[in-house]
Length: 310
Image (spheres, rainbow, N blue to C red):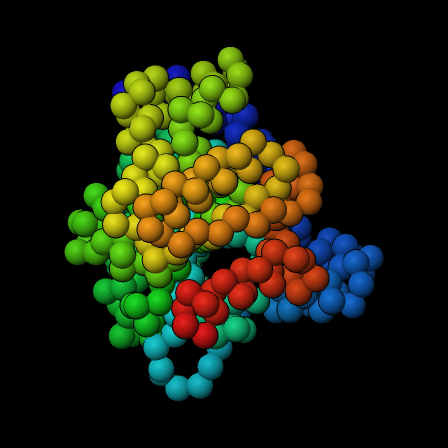
């Protein structure tokens, strides 16, 4: 499919993605001072982030990731969280779309944390992006000894379009197969207000203009849309468990449907709803996750402790 016609939508999506970027440290501190002691402490910790290790997992300039080792003594293997950024499949970056609160919070809790870049539309298609996510995970697993990763305790985490890609890799075995892995090698996945869990439903609910844009991204072919819908793959061996977080958007209905389908197929799945509407809330749930005063942080912490075995 010639994706060059997708470039006008890409420009619009890039502009929207700018609102999802975390605030610069100075602005974060100002906001934290208005938000109470817990928020202020979180902001101070976020400004003191350690430098990551930059790692390539492919030959393309975007096939890179940043790896942050979990806090702890010695070289004991630690669980790993792999974060996949959003950006409507056409934009976003591992540095400006992750949210510094996550890195600080999860590494201090003892988790290794990786945030990845992947190739973007229209230069590749969405299946290539899912393959990038799988290849990054397989590369990290291959380096488990040197990076002190426990390969049995790997969780995918993704926001928006990144949530879709994480869910696709966690349900469709074709992507991890190239690295000698299967979805069952993934302990779980956390989907943060994920998009397009059912691509056909996403297109129908979007209306004519956005629906057309989604068709350019996913194709107008119903079979292809199904192939790129995580909901269509729940009968395959899946990641060990799924947690879906959502705000008050269309994503809420898709999260519930996806969770129900997973549970019917025998995969544990939970859904947690949080206040807020529209794009502002969609961005906030990503940027604030990891802050001690944000309700989703406790929900994810408890889920991770259960899935990772403490």
